[in-house]
Amino acid sequence: MAVQRTDPLLQNRPARPNEPGAKRDQPAGAMHESERRQMLATIEDLFRRTAARTGFGSAGSGVLEAMGRVPREQFVPPESAHRAYDDTALALACGQTISQPFVVALMTTLLRPRRDHRVLEIGTGSGYQAAVLSHLVREVWSLEVVPELAHAAATRLQRLGHRNVHVQAGDGTHGWPEHAPYDGIVVTCGGEAVPPALLEQLAPHGHLVMPVGPADDQRLLDVTRDRRGAVRLRDVLGVRFVPFVHLPAPAPQGAGDDARSIGLAAAADSAAAAFADLALAVSSLVVPARQVRPERRIEFACSATSPQQLLARWLDEVAWAMRRQELVFATFEVAVRGDSLRATGWGQPIEATGTTPRTDPRTWSLQDPRLERTATGYRASCRVATDRQPV
Ligand code: SAH
Image (cartoon, rainbow, N blue to C red; front, side):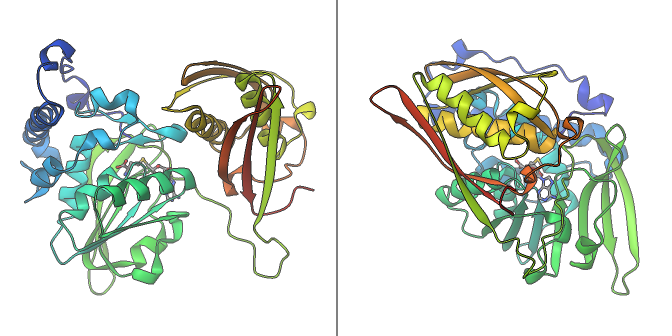
């Protein structure tokens, strides 16, 4: 979810009150402990109430215990940590979301996980679903299309000691054939259909769980395949997940499309102006700013624990708008206060510029964001690895 619930039962639950005052006297560990217990009770309740549709009156064996062991507050951005145990999807960087806990429990249950299983996940996101699975199965292989998210999740999972989870940045459309077959495959982004490669990589009698359908009518499907390859589908519940992203196929070897890395830098008298200029340089890798009309306005907000990290977040947000909304920019206005940033960008859909894009932002990875003080102000820089050199 990403899940904004399309199911009325899920939508109409009263929000659990957040009472900072009530929590203040408890040590941090104990505070999360009781919130985690409450989250598990909500999940059990939702299993009971949706049993007629899902076919499961309670979570699968060991699923709630596994969720009770994962510190969800470590998987959400610091500004959402106080809501980490609410039964709701929460925003991650790059416009992505960490799924609602009930949906994580349901998808995990549908996989029928066992200790000796090897599971493939498409859409690592924060790594939370993978962390839950890592307590239940032998090996988890997880693919994430946004390199920044893949990197952050891999680092987080390693720090928390999940040694049986393997994260890789890449398009999950083709699965991860090197480690197939998988006893279970969980897809945490919604697509129009189950990618055929994933079905091929599913072991006989394994379960593949995926949200399928148009954005306004997604169904969570439980798909199995028997030994002869016959596929059976079960429609479990209406859900809404972030969309499956399909990257263009990689260029054939020898076509001259080597990976290249381009260094960009902007110097200005304030950090905010350097942030704005660097973002414009990033956008100009696709369409030069002077060829973009400022006809659409986009608001940005992010925060971080250091100016350096703030620059990284800001560039992620801009790259995300370019990738997912296919926008390029004519100008940015940025305001930085402490470690948080608010910005407005004016631009156009790439297509509306009538210009051939110089590079494809969906193939980028942003690297080494750096903010330095200079004698006259600030210098912000980064590297962008792209699949081809700008023309
Ligand atoms: N499982 C995650 C929730 C992820 S939301 C968690 O527990 O936090 C869905 C994720 O799927 C997003 O991070 C999105 O970037 C990713 N995604 C979308 N299309 C993809 C694709 N083709 N291959 C791999 N990941 C993809």
